[in-house]
Image (cartoon, rainbow, N blue to C red; front, side, top):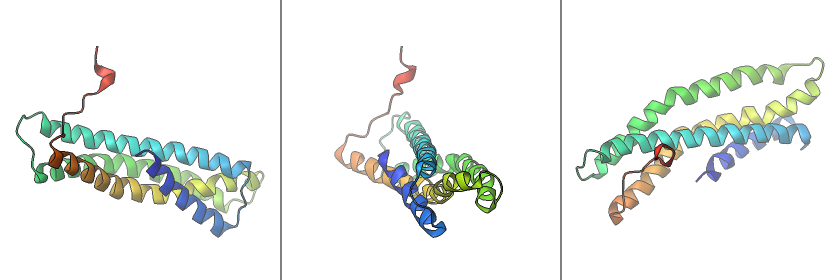
Length: 158
């Protein structure tokens, strides 16, 4: 599931790279590496928030219904909305001015910033809309099979 954020981020990066006319270079690849790190991190955090919201419902002990899963996913996605938008706004606010720069070393910085700016836009759409949808589909399937269980965080176990 972690490959999906990078694919959507790659799409946006490639589109903006093509629109701005940058060829692949070491600087462009550095931009993609940074973009993939941010995209995967935000995707993982969204899934963590969704799991926490669903775990709160499962911890009640009552059998879950379709509506419970839907409410948990909405709750988790809404909790992640502001942090994700803050991350995107900070990245875009810091990198968009680089795309208009014409000073010293702008020929190196622009190819780094282009994939990041384009990829952050498509990655945001993916993380805020598609990750909750994919998560819902997976959990609905687990509910139908009877395999929906409380997710235990392995890092807190003794």
